[in-house]
Image (cartoon, rainbow, N blue to C red; front, side, top):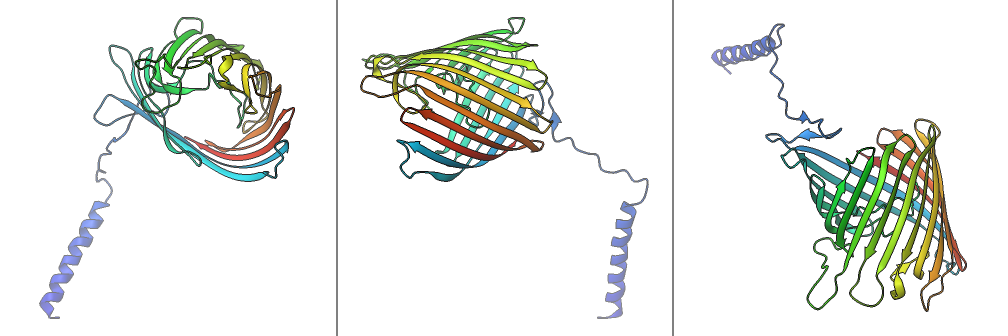
Length: 354
């Protein structure tokens, strides 16, 4: 290497070093920050404006992982006691835009679990009071508290259809009604075709919420089928009460009639013509991170023709502990019993919500 090359390389190095040092000198303006995401507070927490639009978006989700031990007794005691792992998750996209018609909302949710793979759990468009698409129907689906919440089936239902829910009647009162396919087909449930009767579920609800004592509602469903005398009718009343500080109570009663076609089954899977449900559950916030809960549900069953069924009792007892914001550890024991069998299950679950 000659002297000329050495001098040239040294000079170039000094220029680079000098430029880097000058960029760090006090008094030099820092590059302006670019606001890529702008918070949208019009629809609650966690919404942000989609860049270049007036649409607000929230991305939410949940991941759960659990382990369950199940002990079967009575007629179920066939050596099938087991320990099983399970995982499930969902992610939802909630987009809202203000318009002359009111808020225009679209919601899309994908769900996956270790049993059914990936499914579209919800996909609907909402304009003002009106919602069309795949959605949770308007009837009350509240059950017990906890992991195995033991809900009322006709009201805990998701299908494709249309509904109207008016929630600003004053004093906390609201009213809603909807018509849906009578099954949970994701894309296109057929509710009528030439030469057949309609197959659909019609639902309604009226209630009051936001009160110092809690909330109350009455809901009903009517589900039709294209054959036999097997239409399903059901009605349910639910009260969510705030008794004292940190203690919540839920009580509900329901009656469901399945006709002669045995479309109904009780919690034990037995065919039934009609079922009367009563349930009571309580939850107590022991400390900021920990809550305990318990519930019991009793079914009075009228067995369908040719089926053997008896009254059924079910209960759960559990604890929920917040390990960190959005991260909960849950444990629960469940017991169900009918005259010819009983089942005991213990579940441990880790839940992450955002």
